[in-house]
Length: 233
Image 1: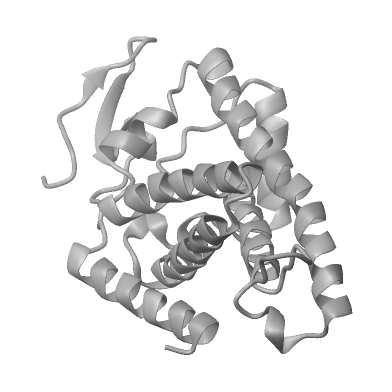
Image 2: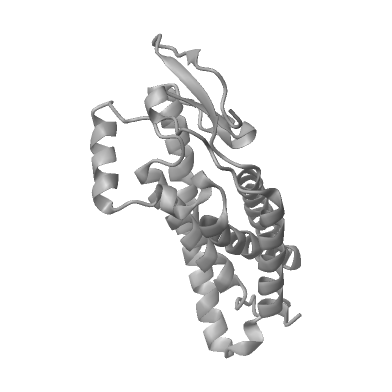
């Protein structure tokens, strides 16, 4: 069956099935976002603010795409597949503390809320940057739409919100490391290959990745929306 391989013996002797969990658009989004974040931080530290702006706008394009893909993408990419209520997240946390967390083909309930939080703080960060100023040579592309005092205030929020971004990134990295150390579960490999091994009980009957052509159209639409709003193109 497409998207699956024959069961293999797991570490504990139980058969596992390898399935496709992250489609190509999700993986490209993830690693492009990482590159843009590194570029944005590096350019800011080097005071290359025009380059910093470009990375920020690219992040906005990626975020808009991910929101659209969360409704129109593949099975495991859709918000409906991994965003659950607080009760489910607390129950999963209790299972984690007891060492008995169930295997999840995609994001677990805690991971789902982490994804939403990351998308939100990055959107705020990039959005604030559009109105930022350094009071010397650089103004964000939308700084002209607000007063000087308002631009300075939004710039201070842009700097302050960076702590939230850094905190969530650190939490994400800590979770990846913890899963590897405590549960021997490599969360990086599936985001590279798109495939992961799960017990048969956790494996879906079939996986439905999102078509690449649809992702390309949504990415083009996202770029058009962001560039049109930011630069009036």
